[in-house]
Image (tube, rainbow, N blue to C red):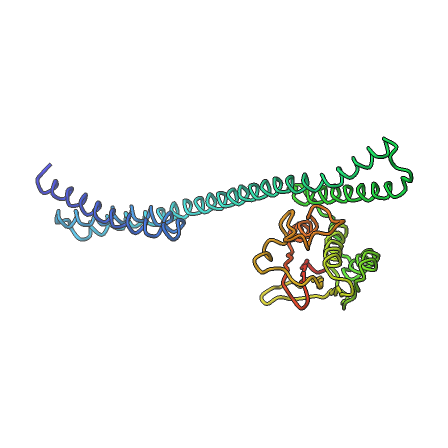
Length: 340
């Protein structure tokens, strides 16, 4: 091989190397922002670096301009191939990134659920001791014949049994809502009638507590699982009644709402109580499993602090939302669901 040929090869290699390094730097810079763009551009950098090297060597060898142009056109024909390969790689990278993101979200969700389950076990284990201790004491007193009139003791025993039954019912409901195999029975139902039924069911508790329950409702249809949403609304009502002082009011509202930028309408249920408000630093924790905030928010006949966690579970299962804010003499809970 002549000296001129060696010089041309060296020049081609040098130009290709320098442009390849520059292109690699550009690809790495692009990868910091968008990996997909970098993946699509990498094959193109190889082809362009090679084309520049060939062009430089052809000029160094004093080839006919027509021959040089022909060589460049041959290399240019590889550009669409490089772009196609780059796009295939980019699509694959994008797919892998999405799969990795989903996997990470699932892992974080599993960690969150596991943490909630551990917290749940702690809360329930603590709360079950109280009725169990009372039931044991009553059973021992009856067994030893220390009770002349067992009527009052049997009444207490029945109350503790009802309390434990409510805890177990809430546990099963929360477990079902957190299950990945949850299947909702969605139907177009009158949310207004559903809320009215929940209010009627909670009325005896309101009468006993000396709390007035009223409100304004519109005729709204929602595509929901009536049983689950009925449970959620009932939990909101019971929570509001228990934390409103005697002589206070609980206001219930049902209406349709269309948020800015949303195509579909939302069915909205609001429940406002007179609890006196929740500290701002506690608002974000209201729907956590076992949350109570303070002894003042722990009803004597309450469960394991699962009612509001169930409400959030129902909202999430319906692709809806629930939030709370301090308003007026207490709090206002807002449950949003897909409208019919």
